[in-house]
Image (tube, rainbow, N blue to C red; front, side, top):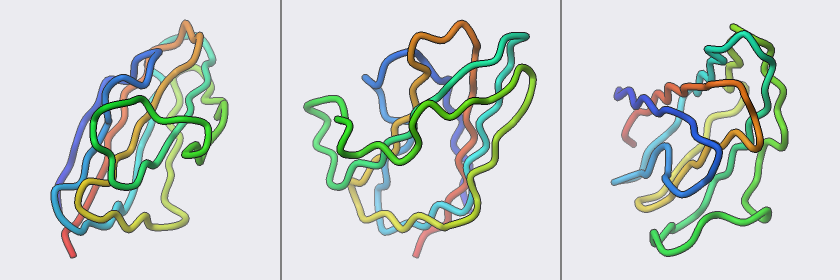
Length: 107
């Protein structure tokens, strides 16, 4: 099992996690560290080549509201990623500050 920590920014220029082998994502924790409510978007991109930011076609959570100083847990379904698949997390136009912790296990 491995843990990846990611500081969420306002853009989607950097992947929060990129699989280097076949991997199961067991849980994603997204914590709002600020005193303001804020939204995040989560994208899952198959075979990400690093050349472009993900589009709306890959969005799995849209404007997910996370209250101030709270944590949202994504654990209902496990994501199975192939080598090169990537997860992006972005806070569009948000004054809130987020960090994400992604737990994975190799298959």
